[in-house]
Length: 268
Image: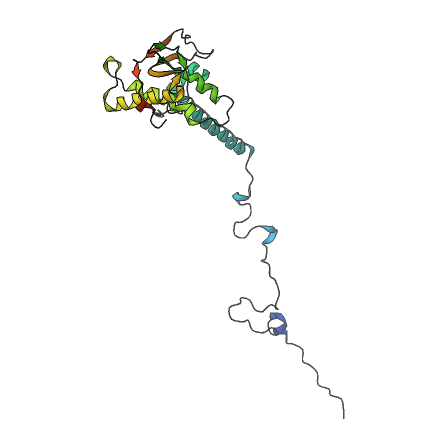
């Protein structure tokens, strides 16, 4: 049997020049004239010179800011931050209690705050008291033969202060009970220094019971038959940096004598 002399025909010149005669037809939905084998990764073609074909060469977004622009932005940020700090400081000084800066620059603060940023509240509400109050009592006692005696003044506030000192968690009783009872009884008094109305009588009785709770039923072996309560007011000395004068007077408020009966001790 003679060997086959059949040979493969060479591609035509037209097919070689077009380069598509030997490629399969493109699949639907895929652009181009051929398909990629599975797992192949394509990368977008770069424009000549590495320029972005969408933005174009030399786009403004790729240009760095000049030193002048950076300087202007930094200066604007500093000015804005300084303005915010000044505003916050002025509002704080308006609401703060009297201090060396507020007293010295009061006119400057008012010229900035008023009227656009005026405030009608206080940083500390209610304002701290500007005086020291001391509540005291003296007792009228009856001896075994009916003799009446009057004790010296007893400083009840001093007893509360001693109980508070050194205590990391002092009780509400030692801090506020006596002071609040005195403030209410003093505020609800009418002509003749007598309790004003039903509320005044309740406040006066409450104050008396608070005092009797502190001193008890007997004083130095004698039965307590009456109490007289008084308040001493001393203004707090101003700080050294202010021009205010130091007060040199102490005022007193002495209430009339109040009888003590067994009913006053009920529940104590």
